[in-house]
Picture (tube, rainbow, N blue to C red):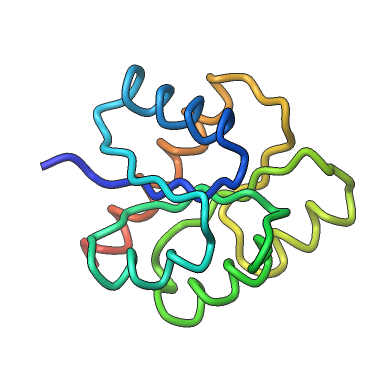
Length: 128
């Protein structure tokens, strides 16, 4: 059974692009939602191995989402992506526990590399 990657992105085009990259270039199963408020029920229901989340979303921003995931699911790697890149934002994301921080636009290879590294970490922490 393929590992599941949750994509949380309010921009439809980016959500579709990320789902397509994962479906076409990895063996993993994408689970998607444009609504960050749906993340808690999805994590409770499905066995998610990694989360990719946009930083700026209505309802719950990426930092709030990261804090919620860290509190309840500390072993799930979270990759934050953003179109509003700054060194301060990157530093804050990593300080708050993001596995990786990727500015948009990104190359497909960069997101796949982050996914593979995050899942390798997830596998190693689950095998302890």
